[in-house]
Length: 618
Image (cartoon, rainbow, N blue to C red; front, side, top):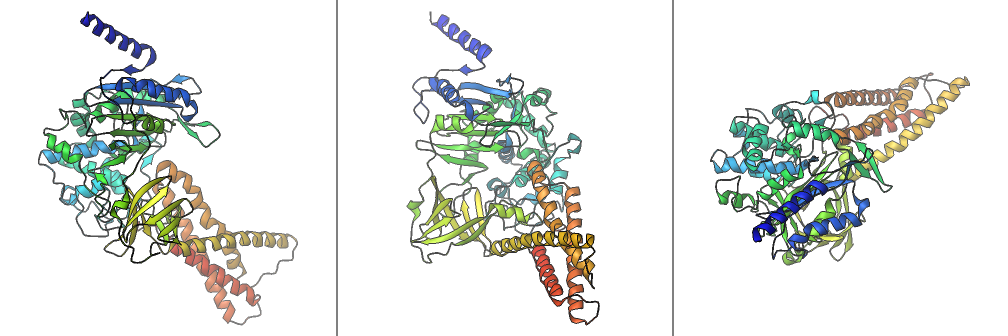
């Protein structure tokens, strides 16, 4: 009778897969951190999906314990316009969750004695491979895992629209190398480039491409037959074809809008190009908690991977776990990674103590719904446990810029969008741009409240930079932002005035009332081109967001335009100054030359301060 019941249960599960695309596996006496019995996990997720249909267009999810796949589900439509349902064999992009394949690969080579986590990675690279380092300090694999090698964001595009533009990983790294902003080990600034560099090191040590290494040492051992890692997915024909079925959707408050396929090719593919089915992603995630640790010869290697490798200052609060990040909830602490591409978002989380975890991928929404259903709401470590005295109240005030931003070159102006103005309110309390409150608990320890309460840490680097950090997000005190923004604001006002003046000149020219004078042409030229300075950069913003950078052609073209504009401003200023001090019957009114000198001088200072003509050195 027992055999019959088991067979019936197996047949029922098989029919469930066949007709609904959902699998359910029962487990006894086990519950999620939110108190849901393992055998009711599927029902809870389905209930959320049914009650919140406007929160997503399509998503897939899987839930597992250390020895079972508890649930798989597919929801919504991957192509709403053509009514194509999402299914368990639909493929989605992992985004930055892909980086976990890098850190697993690194630890495999470490286990084999082929890679030293504390050696300078330059010992594994071709001579002179890194060309934009500010410091001679060693950059270790631990630095790359902790995202504290010192790099900011770069200018050049990390992904392309056309598969014909795909280049090798080594070429892509050299073509997109960002400037090193901080001394290694001092500032945590999340870096796609650094993770891709780590993957390149893996390939160099293994003597094969990184993609081949991952297939042989991760995908194949786990039976991940429906997962690709190369930018164009050509390493898995099934994935390459299925990815064409997926469409991306965005909701800006007025309903879901179809963004198309958003099929882009990530040249730094180890950092975010893995694409596949939810079942395969679950196999990978479960490998972190399985008792047989299938990707490592020794359990000690996995234990090391899942141990803290950096902390929030000297608080003892773990930050990075050799490339994995920590999420804390009321009743559990999770490790994992989130990811996002132009078309998808994903999340992989697990509790290393209980072995319970989940993965979710979506082309629209639904990710947070699954997380909160299974784990509840976040509860971050309490920084009050590290409170002390504040020797200099109000010392944190100022304007901070995101360390993970473009800090060099003509996209510096967009890096200012991640600024964090902090003003002092008294009683060791600060206001952060009206969106969050910061409470200083000691000279170094703070907490930031924005709905949830996050622990934070403030410190000075060896170079004297003041850093405000919240885990993987860091901000640097930047005293140039306020004057730079003021200059930019004045310049924009000047630009509007120049436009009206040019229109006035055109009208007077038509009416034959325009009187020219010495230097008139250069002064007029400077007024005409004033809008040209900001127009190309604003136009490139959409391209930057789309390609995660701009192409070399775009960059050099804009640089040439900016250089011409700067030359005209300099010529107009020099000409006006010359005419101002040289008496001549052909001179115009003095006030016109004075205004030209002031206007062009400010324009020159603004362009130099915002580095609008700095492209060669970035």
